[in-house]
Length: 122
Image (cartoon, rainbow, N blue to C red; front, side, top):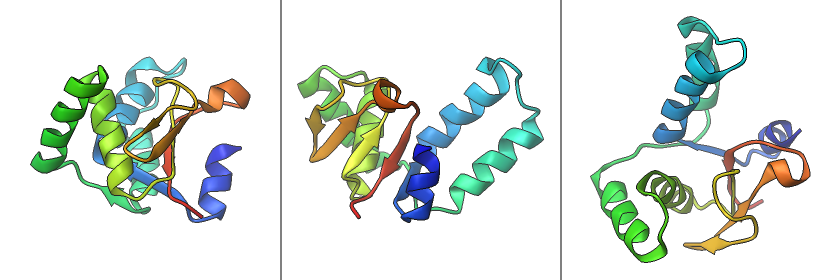
């Protein structure tokens, strides 16, 4: 599983935006929604890894990237966060597999196996 591989290789990186989106998905969109406490426990585990806190500079960079690359603002913010953590790859189903943005290779894990996280270079 991708998450296990990233954890074992100490390559997992997460942004505050990804944690926010994950919380909403777990508590509102999951087939069996998590209780808030359960979702917070998942977020707590992920927040133990290097965390990119979205600040105003990241927001500014995402606005610029969205404007020049035709990404949504939210997708651009995820890419900016990944680039700022030094990620070599961004695992997501929301962007084009194989594309490279800001030096980060986009990989759709659902294409081969499936799901979304940042990974720094080995």
